[in-house]
Amino acid sequence: MNIWPLIIGLAPLPILAIVVGIFVFSRSGERVPMAPGDIAVPLSAAFGSRKGLGPLAGTHNNLNPLLILHADAVEYRVVKRTTAPYADIAEVDAAPGRWSSDIILTFGDGYRFAGRTKDRGALAAALKLLAAKGCALTAAASALGEGGGA
Image (cartoon, rainbow, N blue to C red; front, side, top):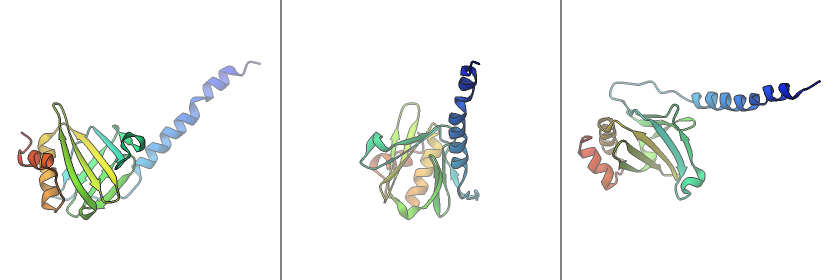
């Protein structure tokens, strides 16, 4: 009896289980409902890393990235949905590009969240709100926030 077709047919099952587990894990977490005045920045990708480690400790998500600025906290997702108060944000940076722009949130514990968006108007509104909440903006972020997405 030849068992190779059975082995080849069952080989993708562990990979499928891992993918389903990651999807379920990324959907878990506290979901903060949207309120009037909240800003949801439409992201095409999200990246997470530790400050100083560069690409060695990085994660990314281009399936369901999330960045929502609530009245009292920022909600983001690279792998898992996380909510953090504005006081935890040490610095906000922006990297404008030709086709898309990045918003980079560096937290006090060294975690860095970067979100890529094509909507400069939403990015400018987010930067204005972050400045109003007392977050420190870099010169590039201030210029992009004041420019109104131009």
